[in-house]
Image (cartoon, rainbow, N blue to C red; front, side, top):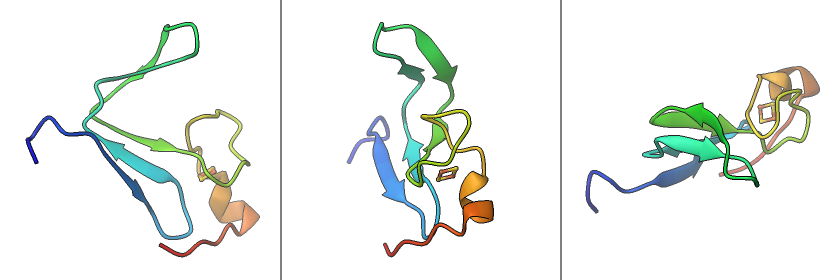
Length: 65
Ligand code: FES
């Protein structure tokens, strides 16, 4: 795997950790966030979807990896 590879890792009881992207864009192609590491909500409770805002902890979201 090269250093430029994008990896997506589900975190236990939390979001998807995405490493290796430089820009996340919306459906119109507009940049939403620029970072080499971002966290995407998978509990459905975030107020700033698609990004995790920590709401999964308050909601008691559980998952297995
Ligand atoms: S996974 Fe963190 S707010 Fe949904």
